[in-house]
Each structure stands twice: as C-alpha cells, then as structure tokens.
Image: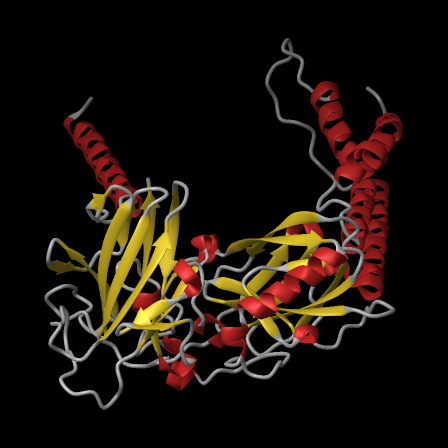
Length: 277
Length: 220
C-alpha cells in the first residue's frame, strides 16, 4: 500500500503538469475569445478580467479533476476481494491546511483584483449618479430611458432630442445615463460590454468607448412584465460624420415631440396618479 | 400480486395520469393563444376597425372594469387582440376611441411614426402629434416602428359610453391612419399609456394581459 505522501506527490505532479499544459491554451486560445469581445475599452477590460479568473481557476479545476480520476483508478475495489466496509475517514491536517490556504489566497486575490478593476474602470456597469471611475477628457452623454416596454434615447447636447433608435459615434467616450419611467429594467448592450440597471428616479451612469463601427444588440436584462422578452433593439456605432448627419435628421424627425418633452433631467417622475387614469 | 398491492399500483397510475394530464393541459393553455382574427383583404389592402373602451363590461369579459381594445369582425365587436395580416400589405386602421384622457408617461410617444406621411387623422383632421396629456391610449407596434397616439374623449363630453361595446352615437374620437406590414413575422402590439385604472401606476391588469391592451399581429 502506498503512503498518503506518495498519493500527495502523484497528485501534485498531475496538477502541476496539467496546469502547465492547459495554461497556455487558457491564456492564448480561450482568453481572447472570452465574452463580451474586445469591441470597446470596457469590453477589453472584461475580457482581461475573465481571462484572469480563468487562469486562477485552472490549477484548482485541474487538481479536482485529477483527484477524481486518480481516486477512481487508484482506490477502486479489486473484484476478487470480498465486499467490505471501506477504511474509516479521518481528518488529514496537512491536506486541510494546504487546501484552505491555497483557496483562501485565491479568493482574497480575486476579491482585491475585482475591487481594483471596479474602482479603476467601472467595468461597464452602472456606477450610480456619482461614479468613482470616471474617464478623463470629454464625454458625450446619452440618456437611456426605459419604459414598459421600449428603450428610448435622449441626447442632451443636441437640444435634448429623444429618439427611438440608439446611435453613438466611434472612438468617443460615451456616458450612458440609464433611468426608467416605471418598473425596474436593465440596459444591456452586450457587444459594448455595458449592463446597467434602469431604476425609476435613479441616474445610473456607465461609460464606454467603442473602437470600431458596428451594430450591437440591446436587451432588457431585468424581468419587467408582459413584453419583457420583446424589449430589445439594435444600436449602431457609426463614424463621426454619419453620427452628425443622423442626429440632425433625428432633430428634424422628432421636432413634433420635442416641444412636449420636459427639460432634460437625470431622471423623471411623471405624476402616477394622473397617468394611471 | 396481492389485492392490496394491485389497488395501490392502480392508485399510483391514476394519480400520475391525473398530474400528467393537468401538466399537459397547463402547457396547452400557455401555448395556445386566442384564435387570431383575420380581416378580409382586397389584394394587398386590409381594413382594420377597432374601438377602445374604458370598461369592457360583463358581456365580453369576466374583468368587466378593465380597459380594452375591441376589433370589429364582420360587423360585430369582439375582444380579440391577435390578428393575422398579409405580408407587404397596406393596412387602413380606424379606431373609435370612447375612453377619456389619461396622458402619456413619456411625451416622446405623443408623436406618430411609422405610418403613411407620419400623419394620422383625428375626426378627419390631419395631425402629426398631440398634446401628451390628451392621449387616451397608443396603438404601437414597436418592431415595425409604428406608434400612433389616441386622442381621448373630453371629460365633460355628453353621452359617454359605460360598458362595451360602445355605440357610434356615444361620445368618441375617430382616429384613422395607414401602415404597412412589411415582411412575415410575429409582432407584438401594445398601448404605452398606463391606462389600467385601479392598478399600481396604471400598469397592471389589462396592460399585462393579452386580449385587452396588448396583442400580436401575425404577418403571413
């Protein structure tokens, strides 16, 4: 019978070798293809964050799988032996200390790493009305107004025009100001790496800068009622010239509603009593 | 097998059968919606006549106080909000609105879009938008970019309709417009005015139930 130390040595070798084989695949093959893709600055950061998570979890996953397979093969019963109870299971202090120490280090590292990423970049999530992580330089504010069941968009620097479609210029820092007129919704622009809750009375700010022109999908990510599943849209990242032309067209197209819109505000509170009829 | 064992087995089989039947019935009730109304088409042109009422009344629904759309099927008003329309068709819509003014939550939706000329008529008068506070309802097919605000009946109008179906001699506003169905698909339509009186912020009940202020258009 092998000693417990020889089992530990074998498992350690299997884990180290497996990790050395898998890590390059994780870093160079899986990592670059992690969601949501590198279409924006926050998308870039999220891909990096997801890759780091994957790298940290790789040795633990390898160890668990190696342990499982090792146990199945090494401790299997001999068919010739009579059926009998296994040996009583007792605690093994060195193993427990090793497992608790390594997992604690990993979890603490991820907690610090994750907090640092959130504090330095915002990670594409809504940061509330007073963001900690702000980009330097100028930003183009775009208000996202959620309502049952449609997103509309308001551009305060273009006369406060409200539009039914979302277009943003490429290579420009955008500040999405996400709010709601009724229930809780969530503005999820997957390819941009932006996901921000839309709460009534709250200005939830998320920053993003797109690196290329493209279409992107917009969905509500918060169950919000009958037509939640239909609350989607397609947005566009366009060139600066295309954006200038488009926003001018929108101001003309929606001039009829512009005169009725309330002054631009970070959130709106329509009178619920009157509106309820 | 003993007699007692046979009875137990039979009870289990019957019990499982009953539960399975209930599950199947529930799934069928979820997947089978109301029978769609298919208005007669003349070539690629369809006339759709609707009315909106403040209370559907006990004759047409167990939820007698709920606000609702109705569709005119061969001269009879029915509570059906699932319609089948031909693809690439021109749809002339007439809405007789008998409901009062409850106002839009988002004034942006007071402007019509996605219809011919982005104009609709209220009692024969062409309009592109209305005062959002005068809106009673909207007719909107978001995926076709169609939205039309429905002008509401004045609070002091005489001979207002109580329960549906309402008669054209009663106080109402007539809204007409034309839109095009485009390609085949399954499109939801809805009202954007929080008009469900008696529910929190006007968004419950008939606003959350197909057959009242929401429905589907099957474009085939």
